[in-house]
Image (cartoon, rainbow, N blue to C red; front, side, top):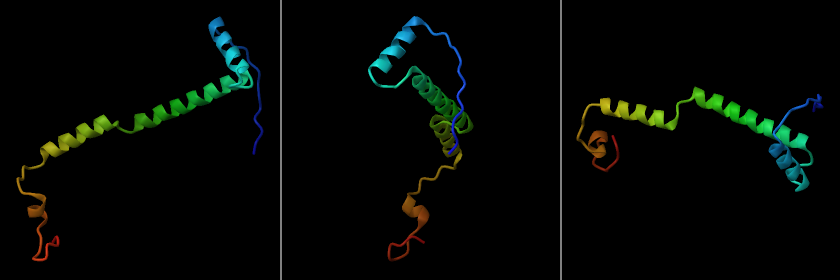
Length: 94
């Protein structure tokens, strides 16, 4: 297991955010503001990666529309599934 290397930076945030961060630490949800920022960046990274995955795959809505278009192009056939498959004398599909 590798040890992470830390580098210190300064960021400017609105006072409301600073107050919120401090109250979260005081409530014991996180041990430090640094931990909150690392967690938030991890969530951001996951969300960004998920967005990249979703861009590569069509959404279910797009898939459904494509399937509907495909289905509409099939020739009309009013036979039942049983008629299309066909069964022998014992009721077993041919």
